[in-house]
Length: 186
Image (cartoon, rainbow, N blue to C red; front, side, top):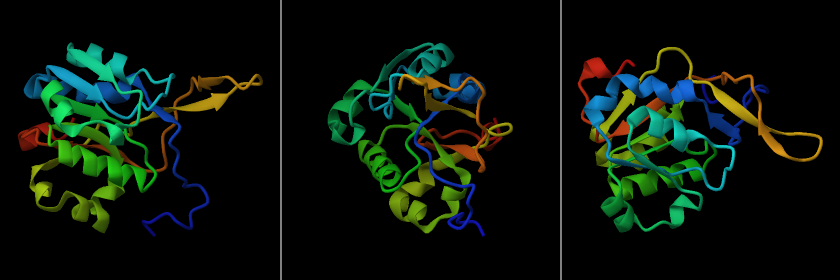
Protein backbone atom coordinates (compact mmCIF):
# COMPACT_ATOMS: atom_id res chain seq x y z
CA UNK A 1 0.00 0.00 0.00
CA UNK A 2 1.00 3.62 0.33
CA UNK A 3 3.41 3.40 3.27
CA UNK A 4 6.10 1.67 1.13
CA UNK A 5 7.50 -0.15 4.19
CA UNK A 6 7.39 -3.55 2.52
CA UNK A 7 8.56 -2.27 -0.87
CA UNK A 8 12.14 -3.48 -1.50
CA UNK A 9 12.68 -0.66 -4.02
CA UNK A 10 11.70 2.16 -1.69
CA UNK A 11 14.14 3.47 0.86
CA UNK A 12 14.88 6.91 2.23
CA UNK A 13 17.99 8.50 0.80
CA UNK A 14 19.38 11.71 2.22
CA UNK A 15 22.28 11.74 -0.23
CA UNK A 16 20.31 13.24 -3.11
CA UNK A 17 20.98 16.74 -4.41
CA UNK A 18 18.33 18.88 -6.07
CA UNK A 19 19.13 19.51 -9.69
CA UNK A 20 18.90 22.95 -11.24
CA UNK A 21 15.86 22.14 -13.38
CA UNK A 22 13.96 21.00 -10.30
CA UNK A 23 14.53 24.33 -8.51
CA UNK A 24 13.67 26.20 -11.72
CA UNK A 25 10.16 24.73 -11.57
CA UNK A 26 9.56 27.68 -9.21
CA UNK A 27 10.18 30.15 -12.08
CA UNK A 28 6.48 30.99 -12.52
CA UNK A 29 6.07 32.23 -8.93
CA UNK A 30 9.37 34.04 -8.42
CA UNK A 31 7.92 37.52 -9.02
CA UNK A 32 4.93 36.81 -6.78
CA UNK A 33 6.94 35.77 -3.73
CA UNK A 34 9.79 38.26 -4.34
CA UNK A 35 12.35 37.07 -1.77
CA UNK A 36 15.03 39.56 -0.76
CA UNK A 37 17.32 37.19 1.14
CA UNK A 38 16.97 33.41 1.19
CA UNK A 39 18.34 30.88 3.64
CA UNK A 40 19.10 27.51 2.04
CA UNK A 41 18.77 25.78 5.39
CA UNK A 42 19.62 22.12 4.90
CA UNK A 43 23.01 21.93 3.19
CA UNK A 44 24.58 20.83 6.49
CA UNK A 45 28.13 20.71 5.18
CA UNK A 46 27.17 19.11 1.89
CA UNK A 47 30.00 20.42 -0.25
CA UNK A 48 28.47 19.01 -3.43
CA UNK A 49 25.26 21.03 -3.12
CA UNK A 50 24.69 23.76 -5.67
CA UNK A 51 21.23 24.69 -4.40
CA UNK A 52 22.30 28.12 -3.15
CA UNK A 53 23.86 28.89 -6.53
CA UNK A 54 20.73 27.73 -8.37
CA UNK A 55 18.37 29.65 -6.06
CA UNK A 56 20.50 32.79 -6.45
CA UNK A 57 20.30 32.49 -10.22
CA UNK A 58 16.55 31.86 -10.11
CA UNK A 59 15.48 34.55 -7.65
CA UNK A 60 18.29 37.06 -8.29
CA UNK A 61 18.79 37.80 -4.59
CA UNK A 62 21.26 36.89 -1.88
CA UNK A 63 21.11 33.22 -0.90
CA UNK A 64 22.98 32.02 2.17
CA UNK A 65 23.85 28.35 2.43
CA UNK A 66 23.68 26.99 5.97
CA UNK A 67 26.58 24.59 6.38
CA UNK A 68 25.86 23.73 10.02
CA UNK A 69 23.02 22.08 11.88
CA UNK A 70 19.87 24.02 11.03
CA UNK A 71 18.21 22.84 14.25
CA UNK A 72 20.89 24.64 16.29
CA UNK A 73 20.41 28.05 14.63
CA UNK A 74 18.73 30.89 16.53
CA UNK A 75 15.14 31.31 15.27
CA UNK A 76 14.92 35.02 16.15
CA UNK A 77 18.16 35.78 14.28
CA UNK A 78 16.88 33.93 11.21
CA UNK A 79 13.61 35.93 11.32
CA UNK A 80 15.58 39.19 11.46
CA UNK A 81 18.02 38.24 8.68
CA UNK A 82 16.06 36.44 5.96
CA UNK A 83 12.84 36.95 4.02
CA UNK A 84 12.36 33.29 2.98
CA UNK A 85 13.70 29.80 3.58
CA UNK A 86 13.91 27.50 0.56
CA UNK A 87 15.43 24.07 1.01
CA UNK A 88 15.29 20.35 0.35
CA UNK A 89 15.36 18.79 3.84
CA UNK A 90 16.46 15.23 4.51
CA UNK A 91 13.66 12.75 3.87
CA UNK A 92 14.43 10.63 6.95
CA UNK A 93 12.42 10.96 10.12
CA UNK A 94 12.69 12.24 12.81
CA UNK A 95 15.07 14.73 11.13
CA UNK A 96 12.48 15.79 8.54
CA UNK A 97 9.81 16.37 11.21
CA UNK A 98 12.21 18.28 13.46
CA UNK A 99 13.23 20.54 10.58
CA UNK A 100 9.59 21.30 9.77
CA UNK A 101 8.92 22.10 13.45
CA UNK A 102 11.90 24.48 13.43
CA UNK A 103 10.64 26.13 10.24
CA UNK A 104 7.25 26.67 11.85
CA UNK A 105 8.92 28.11 14.96
CA UNK A 106 10.83 30.57 12.78
CA UNK A 107 7.52 31.43 11.07
CA UNK A 108 8.99 32.85 7.84
CA UNK A 109 7.59 31.99 4.42
CA UNK A 110 9.22 28.80 3.24
CA UNK A 111 9.32 26.28 0.41
CA UNK A 112 10.53 22.74 1.00
CA UNK A 113 10.57 19.61 -1.12
CA UNK A 114 8.72 16.61 0.30
CA UNK A 115 7.37 13.29 -0.85
CA UNK A 116 3.78 14.03 -1.90
CA UNK A 117 2.44 11.19 0.25
CA UNK A 118 3.67 13.06 3.36
CA UNK A 119 0.83 15.53 2.86
CA UNK A 120 -1.69 12.77 3.59
CA UNK A 121 0.05 11.45 6.72
CA UNK A 122 -1.25 12.03 10.22
CA UNK A 123 2.12 13.35 11.38
CA UNK A 124 1.96 16.12 8.73
CA UNK A 125 -1.30 17.53 10.09
CA UNK A 126 -0.14 17.08 13.66
CA UNK A 127 3.14 18.94 13.07
CA UNK A 128 1.50 21.85 11.23
CA UNK A 129 -1.49 22.06 13.59
CA UNK A 130 -3.49 25.28 13.05
CA UNK A 131 -0.73 26.61 10.78
CA UNK A 132 -1.82 24.09 8.13
CA UNK A 133 -4.16 26.83 6.88
CA UNK A 134 -1.04 28.64 5.62
CA UNK A 135 0.23 25.58 3.69
CA UNK A 136 -0.01 25.33 -0.07
CA UNK A 137 1.19 22.47 -2.22
CA UNK A 138 3.03 23.55 -5.36
CA UNK A 139 2.69 20.86 -7.99
CA UNK A 140 5.63 20.60 -10.39
CA UNK A 141 5.29 19.69 -14.02
CA UNK A 142 6.44 16.08 -14.03
CA UNK A 143 8.71 14.53 -11.42
CA UNK A 144 11.38 16.49 -9.64
CA UNK A 145 14.71 14.75 -10.20
CA UNK A 146 17.87 14.64 -8.15
CA UNK A 147 21.58 13.88 -8.43
CA UNK A 148 22.80 11.00 -6.26
CA UNK A 149 26.07 11.35 -4.37
CA UNK A 150 28.51 8.52 -5.00
CA UNK A 151 32.10 7.67 -4.05
CA UNK A 152 34.82 7.06 -6.58
CA UNK A 153 37.58 4.44 -6.20
CA UNK A 154 39.60 6.88 -4.07
CA UNK A 155 36.70 7.52 -1.69
CA UNK A 156 36.02 11.01 -3.08
CA UNK A 157 32.38 12.06 -3.28
CA UNK A 158 30.92 13.18 -6.59
CA UNK A 159 27.46 13.68 -8.06
CA UNK A 160 26.23 11.12 -10.51
CA UNK A 161 25.74 12.92 -13.83
CA UNK A 162 22.56 11.03 -14.66
CA UNK A 163 19.70 12.30 -12.53
CA UNK A 164 17.46 10.05 -10.48
CA UNK A 165 13.68 10.13 -10.61
CA UNK A 166 12.56 8.83 -7.20
CA UNK A 167 9.87 6.14 -6.88
CA UNK A 168 7.50 8.78 -5.45
CA UNK A 169 6.29 12.17 -6.60
CA UNK A 170 8.01 15.07 -4.83
CA UNK A 171 6.14 18.33 -4.38
CA UNK A 172 7.03 21.76 -3.08
CA UNK A 173 5.32 22.41 0.24
CA UNK A 174 5.01 26.13 0.83
CA UNK A 175 4.08 28.09 3.92
CA UNK A 176 2.84 31.68 4.16
CA UNK A 177 3.21 32.43 0.45
CA UNK A 178 -0.47 33.29 -0.10
CA UNK A 179 -0.45 32.33 -3.77
CA UNK A 180 -3.55 32.26 -5.96
CA UNK A 181 -4.85 28.77 -6.73
CA UNK A 182 -3.85 29.25 -10.39
CA UNK A 183 -0.20 29.48 -9.25
CA UNK A 184 -0.18 26.11 -7.49
CA UNK A 185 0.43 24.17 -10.68
CA UNK A 186 3.90 25.16 -11.80
